[in-house]
Image (tube, one colour):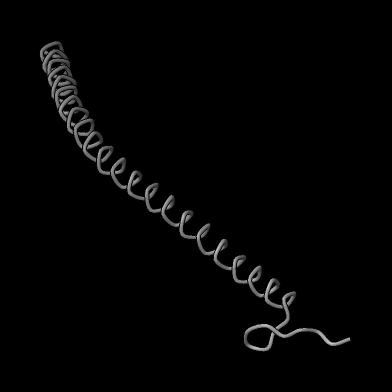
Amino acid sequence: MNSRSNIAGMTISQMVSLTGFIMGFVTIWIHLEICIAEINVELTNLKQDLIQHKTDNRKDIEILRNDNAGNTREILRKVDEIQIYLRNNRR
């Protein structure tokens, strides 16, 4: 049986196999590129969320700090009043 050669000395079945193999690689490469693009979009969104939450957290921390300072002053004022009361009642 004499098989007919095609371009580059390959039979038709070899050319089909090689073409399928190359198409498989191209398909995998395209799929990987799409996945990488999706990951890049997610990463960009996460970075934007992080920046937004940092800003929100700074505002919240500043509010809490101010509230804490006000509450501390009020507690210290009441402690001072109690100390003054206790000093005056000793005599």
